[in-house]
Structure formats: C-alpha cells, structure tokens
Image (cartoon, rainbow, N blue to C red; front, side):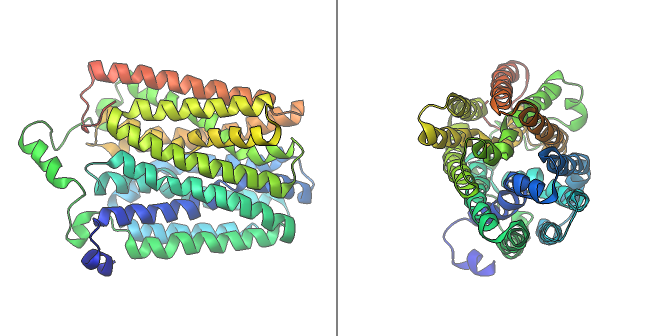
Length: 425
C-alpha cells in the first residue's frame, strides 16, 4: 500500500477501485452468482426437486435482508479493511463446507452464514468506498468496480460448470472457495483503506468539490436525513423500484438451468451463460457509469434495463438458435449488474450524501428479500409448467416496470427535491 502511494502517479482512489473489482469478482462472482450452476447437480445428487435447493438461496437472501441494517452500522463505525478480511474468510470457509454435506440441511446452515457475510459486500462496502474516495466520477468508478461482478460471474460460471462436469460438485466447491479467498482477502487487506485521511490523502476530485462549497453552489452537508426521507413517498417508490428491478435481474440465477432446458450440456450451458453475462455486464456497467456522469442516473440505468429486456425477448423467441441465445443472454447481461449500481446511484442522486449509508441500507434490504422470493417463484414456474417461458415474461415485465418508475422518480426529483450530491438525475 505504501509503495503504491509513494510511486504511483495514479490517484490512490483508483487503486481502491481496482481492489473492489477483485473483491466483487471473487465474492459476488463466485460465492453468490454461481449458486445457480450448482442447482441441478446438487438436486440430482441429493434426490430432491430444484425447489429444495432454491430454498437455500431463499434462506441466504432473507438473512442478507435482515442483517443489512446491522451491517451498515458496523461499516460506519469499524475499519473497512478488517471487516472485509474477516467476512471474506468466514464466507469462504462456509462455502467450502458445502462440499461436506450429505443432506440439503447443511446448505441451509451455510446459507445463513454466507448470507450474513454477504450483507457487507453485496450492497454496502463498495458503494461506501466509492462515495468516500470519489468526489467526482463516482458513477464511472462504481461502474468499473462493478465490472468485477460481471467478469467474475462470467469466468467462474464457465469454470464451475467445467469443474462439476469433470470432478463433481464437491471438489468444485472446494476449488472455488479457495479461488474466492485468494481474489478477495489479501488484496482487500493490502490496498483498501476506510477513507483517504487514513493514509494522508484527500478524495479524488476533492479540490473541485471544495471549490463548489466555497462558491456556495454546494453544501457540505447536502441532502436529507433518514428521518426526513422516511416521511417522503418517493422513498417508498424507490424501494418499489428496487423490488421490480431485483425481480427482473434475479432470473440470472436460473440462466444455466434455462439453457440446460434448451438441450445444452452442463459445460456448454454454464460457459454460454458465463461468457455472455460477463461481456454484456462489463459493457453495461461502463455504459451506465459514463451515461450517469454525463447525462444523469435515469439515462444510464434505464438504457441498461431496456437493452436487457431486448435480450430476454430474444431468448424467449428462439430466433437464431444457439447464436440467438448467446446474443440474448449477453444483452441481458447489461441489466444483470444494475443490482450493484442502481440503488446506490439513485439514492445518492435523489437524497444526497448527507445520510447516504443509512438511507441506502434500508432501500437495499429489498434486494435480498426479492431475491429470496424470486428464486422460489422462478423455480416453481419451471417445475410446474416444464418451461421457462412464463418466468422470462415475469422478468421482462418487472424490469420494464422498474424503468418506468425510475423515469417518474427522476421527473419528481427535479421538480420537488434538492439534488444534494451535485449529480444529474
């Protein structure tokens, strides 16, 4: 860390952003987004329906929701680097233990542990670090950081499918747990710092930010408190947006099984899903981040949602055969990582930075709750109908509803709210 600080001509904030790429690639890309790859092999090995495995995802998500307010308080008062190394280590050990169970109840136990650890990493730490380290280009930085989720999901979904096919699911859990720790733990410990002042630096863009404050164009305590926003209807509309958006995005966990239902092998399905989501997710994150900083939050997020919806329609239509599926899943990748960006950027744009961490914690609670619900709903729709058609239509409708509400919130915020973070909406 000291070597980077002394020798690099790049502002240290960008190194923090790079470390977040690795954290998300190892932690979310493997431990969270590879859950769907194990759904079929684990269910078949245990002789249970896939809804039994989906219940483990539901438990994980419910713990994630219930633990997020507590995790937000811990993040606000404790050293971020130590939190990261602790939760990553515990989470990887729990993930490794999935290779040891002989009944589904073991997965339910580790889902509780992993769910609580994910409270810190899934929603809180990366947006928190980007807000602290970047006073300008925050949207771009968050977009690049969230590419870690797309890259990790793509690479490790393909790898996990190959591992399961060649070694079985138990060794695959062990190998992936080790990779996740190596990517997330040491890098986070060496590079991440809670705030610039910890190493005698100022945030990226701090001088311009201070100039805006001195000129009276911006207040240092800009925005609203949690108590104030709790009385605003737009606060609850934002929650509804997150529910609809998460419902649409959560179909990603079904992609491997969806492709298997189209006759692909495990290796082909996981590879196709992984590569397409990775490419689409990276491009989508960069596009959304750039559009956010230049034109406002609405343009960036809605553009990615609409492209993702086109991808879902292409998957549903069957046009182009395997090539069409590849393109469709890739386009759906544009929306997949909006779960990492949308809530944070919308909260910052609408309510400012004054009480960002606490407000965002209450909004993002609905991400795991909806994920828990959607995992079971999508699995149920498939097992009860024998096809994913109704599930795809549900994901499509929810995504469009989220886009429409985001457009409306943007209009309302421009007319009635003070845009506290100097961010266009």
